Length: 165
Image (cartoon, rainbow, N blue to C red; front, top):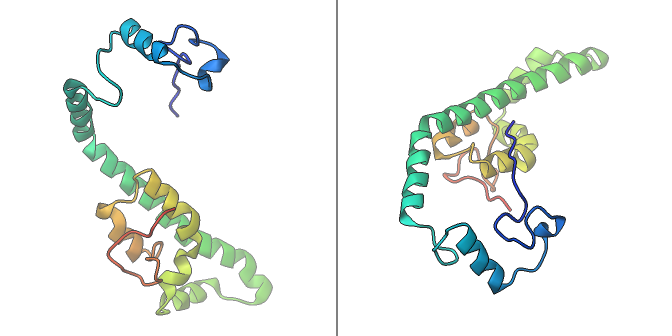
């Protein structure tokens, strides 16, 4: 968990620390005063070179950590995927006379298994993990091999991540 302590409207004297900092109208004078008070001589939407370089350097330092997070997300969901099927079949199997272990083996052998299995993931889990950057070109093949992801056309491989709205 990450906790951030902020001051709403920081740098805009008439709004700083007030609820109106969320939605109050800003005027050109507000921007001028904020730039002066915060010692920010740059125009709107310009990121100074030294800030941009520091940001990019920080991103490069964390590539291994990011890869670790991607792998962790995949391993957790791969385990949940396998256990969810068996747990459900262990609960429902005896009630309906189903041998869960054999059913899972039969399902995994179906030619459209990836499409069937990925349904639960494709509409919620996969899009959210893509938005978080935890499914990348580096990890996409693993998701497809585990039958937790298919392309929009339903095939097990398509060469591109599904479109996310």
